[in-house]
Image 1 (cartoon, chains in turn brown, purple):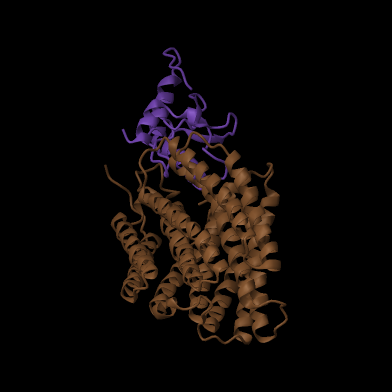
Image 2 (cartoon, each protein chain N blue to C red; image 1 turned 90 degrees about the vertical axis):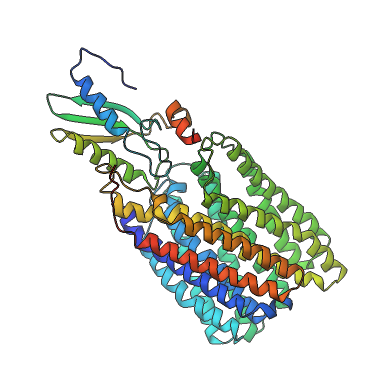
Length: 426
Length: 111
């Protein structure tokens, strides 16, 4: 096994497996909070679930995938393997403290310690990314710009989050928590997740489906529009809250997202590989869920400006569509395009060529992935419909399907992890 | 890539090496590296018992890169035990989709 793969193996695998455990924990937490979903999103249990989803599930697996994929995107080896390990230890020490404190709403030293540990973890991750980018001998491509900028937004998001945590006990911020929560959430969703996902997927999708056309012009425009809208949103909302200008800012963000979709469609249209595998179908589903969440934004802004309390209900639906829908669907699919590769490399690099070996895609169970996808689609249908029509029964059913999804996902990851080398006889 | 020269005694070995390389797939695309157009040159030095393969990868720092290069070395060494094998990685010319053969395109299209 090559030196870099040897070094990154334990690191990447640990991130994938731990994030899967946090995903299951989040699904169980959701089941115990169904009744609270009908209330305000600034509810201790919903804050705990959101942070478990955004950090334990989404961010942790993104960190792991980044250590595997950043060398591909930046075309250089990871600058350090020690900092990511320290970052991981800080992360898994901080997250349970933060989530536990939110769940019981105890904004004391445990929550503060959790927040600070997570901030340090994030800073170490970003240092690793920045140092690796600096080592790239070539001029930074648009994908690299997306990833670097997403790291800056991540630091700002977590920093604001930590300030909010300290503000619970020692109030020093000039405005109320809900005001800052909007900024915190959108810096995280648009700045961290959206920019990073665009950066990585715009490189990987054409590779996976073998696209002839990779016109990066829409991507560059998308980059500037999304960042412009985020900066405008942060400044405008900080001073004036949600107002009519927010609609204009939303349109700028929407234009950025549409340009990214135009790029993805052009890749699909010019693809040589015709068959769309199940992991990639999950990615398409994730984009549909993201588009559904974005489509809710004008409604939320309109109702908020009218002073209609239903805006709170739709805001929770918006958040659920993004964290449980968009990010989950993306990870649930892409994990099986990335995780089997690192395991395959470890098991078969020395055997390949001498004998016929399985392919990375043969390491996971296709039927389990089909089960997982079916359970996740059932979750989406029952949970989001249950949310829209305020049906507890459907919400409970949805939570059950999410637990099944998480359990099947973990089983499949474990099957890949414990795969024993074998050769195929022809 | 390589022309068949019946007067050159190493041609037959070279063709056999090519056939060996045709059994080595890209693990992601499951298309062999010859039809993907990753192999630029195969040189066989009969007297020195040396095989030199010049090839590229679809992208720099491809996560499968090391595995593909190792497969090439393993596969050729396994079939040509008397020869030493050298695999040279080059980025010139840069690989592009136009390198894929008709057969490779057929396999990718699932035909």
